[in-house]
Length: 146
Image (cartoon, rainbow, N blue to C red):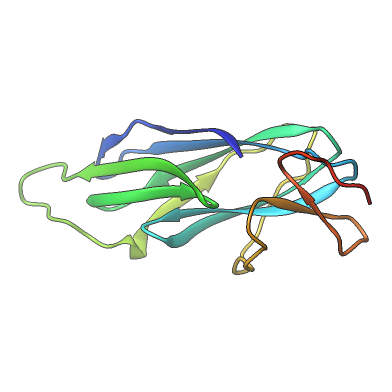
């Protein structure tokens, strides 16, 4: 995972913040990976991406959470802190229970899909599972073979 961003870092209630993350398959086989976006450690969106060897894509998540402060992470990468402030003085802090997320359509080079399944813990580090194979291929070097 590279080039993660949160923009803007502060929004008002009902305004949208955008999280982006660049993901690359550094292996030598096509791989599929589910990427989770978390606010304060709670998964609020997931995206499943299939990438050919050496290909990369940028995932984008749009967030409209309630008032509060949120630690934003994509997988184990800290993206930043999102401040959501009340639109007027009568609004107070909320919870993440009604957080709304939207995901943009990925580039045509991948086959990203929205997943509602809970994420499964993976071995330490980022890895792709080869299609039709149970071996793992790391996002970082050295590349592995099928």
